[in-house]
Image (tube, rainbow, N blue to C red; front, top):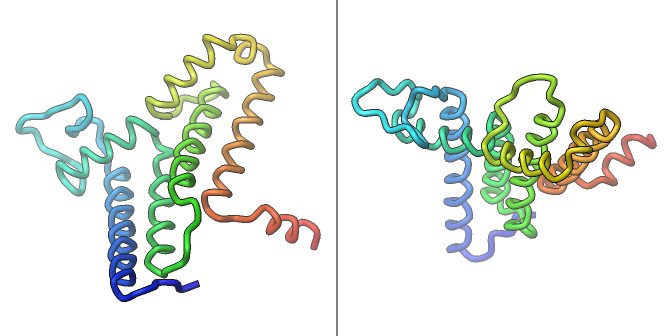
Amino acid sequence: MFNYGSFKLLLLKVFIGIFLICFSLFLFVSIYTYNPNDPGIGRLVGKSEITNFFGFWGAFFSSIFITLYGQASFLLVIFFSYLGIFIFLGIVLKRLFLKILLILLSVTLINISLLHQQSFETDSGLLSKVLFDIYKSYFPLLVNNLLYRSLSIICFTLISIILFFYCFFINISFFKKIVLN
């Protein structure tokens, strides 16, 4: 469980863990205090007042995350803090790069599922909107037919939840034990 290795690895893992925890707290507060009028992607403001809690850098990073992933970027912040805690405690993480890519895919699929529902306007991010527009142009039947649209929403949501569980190291057999008991 607490597998730090040598003293150098101990210091490195503790430093990286603290860095990830602090970065995730920075991102959480920055995204929470996000204002569209602050400088960021596509907006360079001269001498106007920045309302983000962390100033220019908070406005810039929150603009990146909100523009790409929308409000679901809070899930990425939770994942970064989760990784930071695991690394800080020295818990061995397997397939870390794959899980980072899968959490990005999971958040994108959640946003596509929300866009697919079309029942309410949501800030889903640029990446999801582009992928959903491509999906709409190649599979118009899956978007226009109510039955196919419902099945697509269920599939996107289930795939996203399964990827989310895998990224957070939650074993599916854990749920079998809860259901069967």
